[in-house]
Structure formats: structure tokens, C-alpha cells
Image (cartoon, rainbow over all chains, first blue to last red; front, side):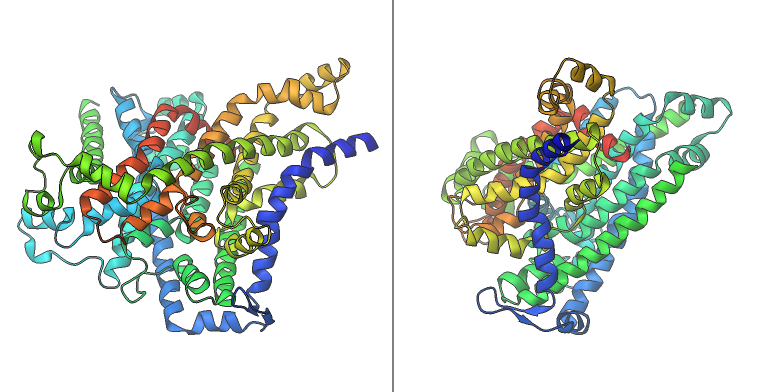
Length: 290
Length: 275
């Protein structure tokens, strides 16, 4: 038995060296820093919960918080719903299905930065696809500088992310549907359940673990992966009106050298994401026990 | 039934037609010069003799230094996922095939990294790399990317190894193999599908990564592709055509990989939802 625990140690040692130095250690260090005042070079000074009081009371942080709430609502509800619908349509027998699924996978490969450029060409005032479309159908009066005022800029950014998020949800749900045993679907066919009813009562409950995964990944997206998209399209502007917490955090840390504020913002994001992950893991566990 | 079928096709075709418009406009834009973008009708294709694709690509690739960072990213996204997948398999093997206390603790410590926003790592990792004299080096970035790739790879590989039957282990033990021998000669070769899936996911992630590149590098010699691409916008010689050309260059590799390995990626989405 002692020999065995020694070999377990030798398996885990190197990978945990990596994880400890670059992931776990930093989590503790960042948490500590969120209670400190620091400029990245000078001495670290402990200030208690000052940073957290500041991030909830200074208006530019409140704007970022509000935008983050809009992002979370915007990337969870509609994309998950539409994605589920798409996946359901694509789960049946269809000629030429491979074309649709192929197209579905393309956005998954496209980086947030590239997505930012693609949608810069959509929302640009003078040359953008959207304003062109509006003038073509005779609604030229609705043309707007979409990215230059709040809340239109944040909404435009969220809509841009849909181009990736809706196919993503569809892909994961489609993967989920292919993993449902064929027999269950056939049985539901036989007892006459059709269409929406079948989706809601039989398929959706079986997809719970996938819904949970998508939900966690989506919330993580709203706190983390939308950075490149926002950075390219607006850099959080104009006048910091389209910032979310990750952009504010970046600017505080690497432009203004307020490491304390930046760490507090990161810590706050972590608490929410972790809360969502723990909360939803209960949601899928309940189903497994039944 | 027939009407339903037509309706399904109708919805799908409308959806994908709308979805492909932005991509189409990207491709049209990268063919045009600045004047053509301003004065030609949006959907018109420039006449074959006046396609500016090569000029746009040349500006992005040479003048705006996308070439250097393209090859940097090729290095990052091939080395880091490879190392990470190997290290993840070292965690996954004892988690699935050996008995020890605190197994769950080890598992949660290994996977928590996928569920936390990266902002938590940025400042400490910058300090650590600076302390190791690895700031703005390829090695430094490879180390950070590798660490970040480990958790998700661990989940995928662990879940796959769980499906390998335990009698394999007993048979190998009877043959006198040590645990390391079992890992190397039996379990690792059988886990190849999971290793490939984990590699593919992390390849795409590293290729598309921008934030760590922004913080942990500050010169052309080390900067990854997406970070450099994001900087195109700030340059005074950049037109829409150049931005579009740069984007096309940057997305072409991941798009091909995802299209070719669709089935593998699908498996990657099924695996983490199983216990």
C-alpha cells in the first residue's frame, strides 16, 4: 500500500506543479490582493474591504456591473432557447443535414477577436451591413450609429455574440440528443407525443446535464470570453459605457495600475461564476437520482 | 407530414442564410480596396482585374506583422495542448484506476480551473513569469497556456478512462506490470480517442486566445496571433479590407480543423455531461 501511494504521488506531482503555480496559487494570491492596495511594483498594503466598497459605489464600475447583467441575460435565455429549437429541427432525418451541421460548426471555430471584426462590418454606421439593410428596405430613418451610445452599444455587442452563442448551444444540444438512447425517442414516437410536447416533456428533461453545462459555459462567456469581441468593437467605449467587468478589470490593472480594484473585480466575477456552477450542479444531480 | 418537412427546411434555410451573411460580407470586404469599399455597392463583386485581396493580405501579413505572430501561435497551439493532454492523462489515470483517499478533492482541484474566469490568473501569472525571467518569452506563454489547458483535458480524459473496464487492469497486474507500466502500455494507448478530442479542443482555445497574449507579451517576437490581430484596428494604415484580410488569415486554420473533426468535437461535448 505504501508503494502505491508513492506511485500516485509520482503520477500527480508534475501536473499539479503546473496547476499549483499558474492556477491554484494565483487564485489565492488574487483573492489576497483584492483586499490590498498595490501598483504592481511598490509595497503591498492591506486595506480590508475598501476595494469592494469602491467597486459597488463608483459609477463607472456600476455601469460595468449593469452591462454584465445585461450580458448574462442576453447570452443565456434567447441563445439557449433558439439553440435548443435548432438542435431539435436538426435531430430528425433530413436530406443534406451535413450541410446545416457543417455551417453550424463554423462560428464555433471563430475567435472573439475575429468575431469583433466581422461585426464591426455589420454595425458600422457608414458602411455596415445593418444600416445598408435598413436603407434597402426603406427604413433608412432607423439607421443609427449603433456602437456610439449606451445602451445600444451593449445590446449590439450582445447580439453580435449571438452569432457564435446560438450555434454553440445548438451544437451542444445536438450532441446531447444524439446521446439519448434511440429507444426512448422511438417509444415517444409510438405513444403519439409530437412536436413541441415531445420536446418539452421527454427530450428536454433528458438534456438536463447539457443544459447545465451550457448554462455554466455561457455565464463564464459573459464574464470572460466576450473580452476580445468588446475590445475590438468598442474597447469598452465610448466613455467606458460598454465595458463589462473583464474590460474594467484589464484597464484598472494594466492601464491605471490599481491592482487592488482589479483583483476585487476579478474576485467578484469568480464568486458569481462559482456560485452558478455550484448552484446548477445541484440541478442536474436531482435528475440523476430520480 | 409533408408540410411539416417543408416548414423545417424553410426555417433552417432562412436561419443559415441570415447566419452566413456576416461571413459573406467579411469575404467580400477582404477583396476590396478602401475606395471600392466606399464607392462600390456593398454586394457587388469587384471585377477580376481589380480584386485587392493580395494587397490586403500583404499589408496585414507583412506590414502589420501578422506573419510573425501566426507562426508564434502555431508553436503555442501545438506545444501547449500536447503537453497539457499528457499531463492531464497523468492525473486522470490514478483518478480512475487506482484507490486512494481524497480522490474527490484531487479531482476538484484539477478541474476548478475550467470554471473560474481567467482574470483571476492574469496579475499573479504576470508576476510569476516576471520573477522567473520568463515575461515576454515563448516558454513563459507556453507554460501558462499549458496550465490552463490541463483542467478541461483532465475532465475529458478521466471520463473516457472511466469507461475502460477494470479487468484490463487486473489482467495487466497478473502480467506483472507496475502501475506506470499499465498506464503506458495499456490505458494510454486505449485512451487515444479522448486524447485526440482533448488536444483538438485545446488547440482551438490556444489559437483563439488573446487576453494572456496581451498581458504576458510586449513584442512582435512573442505576441500570439489574436493579440496582434486585435491591434490591427489601431494602426493608421488599416482599412476595412486589411482588417477583413487579417481576420480571414486568422480564422482559416481553426475553421478547417473544426469542420474536419466535427465528430470528435461532438464527442467532447458529450463526455463532460456524463459522470
